Amino acid sequence: MGNRTIVPFGPQHPVLPEPIHLDLVLEDERVIEAIPRIGYIHRGLEKLVEKKDYQQYVYVAERICGICSFMHGMGYCMSIESIMEVEIPERAKFLRTIWAELSRLHSHLLWLGLLADAFGFESLFMQSWKLREQILDIFEETTGGRVIFSVCEVGGVKKDISSETLNKMKEVLTAMEKELKEAAAVFLNDSTVKLRTKGVGVLSREAAFELGAVGPMARASGIEMDIRSQGYAAYNQLDFKPITDQGGDCYARTKVRIGELFQSIDLIRQCIAIIPDGEVKRKVTGNPKGEHFTRLEQPRGEVLYYAKANGTKFLDRVRVRTPTFANVPALLETLKNCSLADVPILILTIDPCISCTER
Amino acid sequence: MSVVKKSPWILHYDGTSCNGCDIEVLACLTPLYDVERFGIINTGNPKHADILLITGSVNEQNIPVVKQLYEQMPDPKAVVAVGICATSGGIFAECYNVVGGVGKVIPVDVYVPGCAARPESIIDGVVKALDILEVKRKKR
Ligand code: SF4
Image (cartoon, rainbow over all chains, first blue to last red; front, top):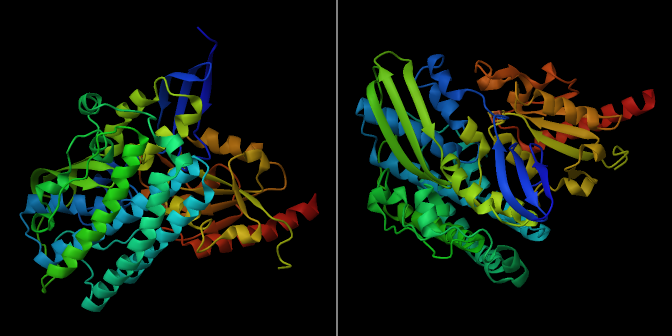
C-alpha cells in the first residue's frame, strides 16, 4: 500500500468555472475515494415561490442555470400549464422546440470546448466556442438575449420568429454543420485526444442503471433513455431516435454528445419544415390549483419539475430534480481508482452544472 | 494602445451565479472577443492575479472563499463585480441563503451591470479597473 494523501480540488479551480469542492483521497497517483462538499452556490431558489407569483417565477426558473436557461423556463411553464389545463398554440410548441434544440447545441459546444481545455487542447477549445457564438447570434436575433432570453411564459412564448429569420437560421446551421464536422473529426479521430478519453472512466451499463445516471451519461453506457421520445412540446411530430453508444468511457460520452449536435440541427430543420402558422400564446387567467410533475430532456439529461399550487397566485412548492444531481453518484463511481491527472476530465464528462444542482 | 499600462491577469471566481455571467466571462476569452490581444489572461492562481472578477452574490458558505482569494492576491489589486447578482443579489436578493452583493464582503472597484452582463460590458469593466489599478499603484 502506498502513501495516502488528501488533495483538495476546488472550490476555485481553473478547470471548472463553478465552485465544487472534492477531497480526493490518493494512494500514490490513484484516487481511492472522492468526498464532495457542496453548498458554495446554494441560494434557496425554490423557496422564492412564496415571494414571487407564479408568473414572475418564470424569470427565477430561467436563472436556475444560465446554460439551459430556456429549458428551465420551459419546464416550469409546462408544469403550470398542465395544472391549469392550458393547451398552448401549436406554433408556440414548435418555437419552444427550436429554442430548446438551439440551447442543446450551444450547451454541447460549450461542453466540448471545456473538455478540450481540460486536456490542454487550447485551439480546439477556441474553435468550439467560436462555433458556439453563431448559435448565440441566432439567439440574439430571435430573442434579444445571448444567454437569458425570458421568452417563455405560461401560455406560450412571448416572441414569434418570422419565416425569413427561420430560413436564415437554416442556412446558418447548414454552413455550421460543415465546420462542426471538422471539429468533430478532431475530437473523435485525433490520436492524442483519444489517449485522454478512450478507456477513461468506464461506466458499465449495469452501474449506470443502478446509480440512476441520466442523459448522455446513461446513453453512452448503452441505456436508450431520452425523454424527448415521450413527445412533449413538438417532439411527437418529429422523427427522433435517441443516440446511444456502448463504450461507457469518456470517448463514448464525447461521441454521443457530438452525435446529438448533428441530431439537434436535424430536428431544427424538421421543425422549420412543418411549423404551422398562427398564434404564439394563449391568454392565461386565474390561478393554478393542483400539482404536477413534468419531465423533459435537457442537454445534461432528464430534469424533473414538480409544482404544487393552492389556488392563490403564490405556489406552495416547486421542486426541481436536475440532471447533474442524478449523475453525481455515477461520477463518484468513475472517480474511484482513476489517476489524479484524469480527474478534471472525468468531472467534466458528466457535464456538471453545479448551479442548477444546488440552486 | 497607450492606455494599457500593463497586461492584467484575471482571476475569475463564481460566487452563486447562475452560470449566465460565467459563460459570458469565458466568452470574452474566445475568438469573437479575444481579450488576450490586450494581454489579458485568465489565471487560476490568485497569487498571479491583478483583477478579481466575481460573478454571483455571496452566501454563508462562500464568504470565507471570497475573502481568502482576495487576501491572497498581491497589491495593487482591483475587484470587478460582474452582473446584477454580484452587485446586489439581483433576482435572488430575497433568497434565504443570499447575503447580498460582493461589496458586503470585500471592497469592489467596478460594478458591471446586466443579467447576464454582456461580454462588451465585462471588457469595459476590466478596462475601467485598469485605470483604478494605475491610481492604486501610484499611491503606494
Ligand atoms: S446577473 Fe443574471 S445572468 Fe448573471 S449570475 Fe445573476 S442571474 Fe445569472
